[in-house]
Length: 624
Ligand code: ATP
Image (tube, rainbow, N blue to C red; front, side):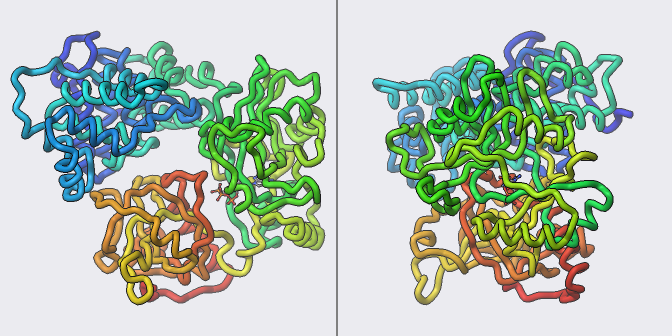
């Protein structure tokens, strides 16, 4: 049941059991991973690293996991390193005795401060060998760095960075710098870290350890309701994988991955998909997802779609809580959409209005864009989690525990009917009421809340796209082309990619040049990168490669099979990929990370759905 790894932990360990593990061990593993493209091999490498840690110094495991996931704290703690390039350049200059001008020059050539650091370190002659860095020390220093504030904070931060750089050798400076920038750039995403952790746990000596597949399932599920490595790793080490769901439960104050919807193109498709199950339709509000947590001690936290702490953005919502919650409620977690709202005219405003709102540490007096909360689900109430309850039961709790406050808090407007005409009318009303369409949800069977899952039990129906491909796509710009004519000197177009979450790589899907303001074209910054986790053909080679950092929502006329673009290659054609025709930029999705872009599986699903609905048999397309 557990074959595949030929592993002898002791033979690779060069520290004594229980001793802090050198950072070099992790840095070398990162190096190995960066040279690999096979997901299985990458997972094995990291799984072996974790196994070694478990077998020798288990207390270090949590630091290994955080750094492999390129994090210093859980995202929901909202603590970021926030170290800019300027500070890194200055620290490098001071640590390695080079001028800042020289470092900037090398950065231009290498395109990566990590590589500059590595080269600078290796060309520096040192009198004596510093004590080796340990993984725990590196993470601790990062945590201290993140909290440095007040007088001389810049200088104190640089001193911490310098201390790390001076003690680093070989490939260590490369990864110290990249971790400081919160980008490892070795093609290692968090999903692989979870699988590797499961693999390591399944291989440990405990007789009750489950097979790997079971361990992976448990760890992914536990992480979706409790994304906190500290608790997960310590429970794993003390009680094994199978006990994790008992300890790492859903609690207010730790956000869970939001349930997601699948696209549909028409009212009749809903009836097909839901068959005999009863369902309900809700307005699909166009704002920003918010998970509102109210803790027993009266504190409130608000988390974004990707579990980041957004509390500082909505002091007004925090004040509203006491007005919309009934006095009997002592703790809750609500799933909602925050929408820009014109309170005078009682009207929903556009998403653009909401994006004008300041993002961090907003003070109530500075708020210019008012918001209203539209609550559509309740996941936790008075000490009990409700994830396993059916939607009709959760909804009853929602209605019973809260009151609507005009302009501040409303229940999502809903209609429960399986009459096609009634649904169509409701969809039209949703659009008139400035919503994007509907979300249709199963109600009393197969209607539990599925954390972090794109579920067949939630379907989104957007008016705009009903005639073509059912939904817009969220894509990542991975490169750009120099402009010609009017756009000479700037960029003329971009290469976009979807994300393959199995292979953990970005796969090019189309070029785009439409929908941009001139300002946007000028603003995009470029940096040369290794393309190890980009999948593309020479025919799409851009002039400049980008780091994957942004997500753009794009609308297209349709999808076609392409020999040039490699999105979902192998899924609907043995070798060819899928491309978008006539793509057009709708907006930048600031609430999504590149790994949350539309996946290759979704692209393949969209293509298949289009074929069924329109009998599209256009096979080969130009590369637009
Ligand atoms: P996805 O999350 O599916 O990738 P997305 O973030 O691009 O998609 P959409 O595809 O537009 O968003 O649709 C899902 C989003 O719609 C939810 O994440 C939520 O923010 C929003 N939403 C608005 N109204 C509702 C509702 N009544 N029920 C559930 N979600 C809603």
